[in-house]
Length: 297
Ligand code: IPD
Image (tube, rainbow, N blue to C red):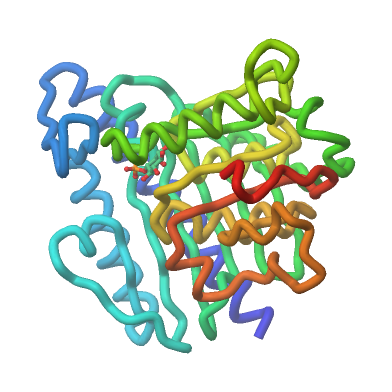
């Protein structure tokens, strides 16, 4: 029920703020004495703080909601890979933007999503560096709360439909897969989003510019806030996007994991399904008013 969901939200917000303290302490400590583990390659980072924050969050959730399931980035990496069921399931990235966290670039956050009956229904994303808290419940809007002493709570609405990609400020991410196939595909898409069609870039849309914030979750929030018109990435995991999906959708944005959206299909490509949660390709926009070709990637 919505009352039950509200109380899960209150619990989750307080958990996010507690985790935020640990994230801030960790970021300072790690810059003093770097202790970084390179997961898959030298750009896929994990620190003892990712693990510690996930442990904290997991154990608090287990105490408060013992019957809820838990999917977390670090648990998944160490082999705990629960199936997605109809049960309430937290989907958590303890530190999204680990590379930023390690470097002290203040765009890192904890991302806590709740999935129920295989749909994301709650999102809480907290950036402790800037004290920005983003929250959303399905059907009840999305909010940004700035500051914790005298908090200012602002409703989020992705304002106008995106007029055209050529007028858009767009987020893209490099991700951690730097092999030739992945990187060539991504770079070609970046070229088409930014490049001048009259000066050698076939299919170029010459968007206003491209940004890489280094956190998938915060990119979703920035689209919800209207600061970005679109975010596109290949290679995200469910915990990177689960909370952001609810926040972006509740602000009026459109989320899809399928590139049928590019074709403005009459079907309902925007419905969030388990497929989107387990897909690896995401597009989040204020609203679609342009139709890049599918082959364009
Ligand atoms: C990563 C960040 C990054 C994005 C990757 C994510 P992590 O999450 O959000 O911006 O490009 O796809 O996996 O590793 O910092 O939790």
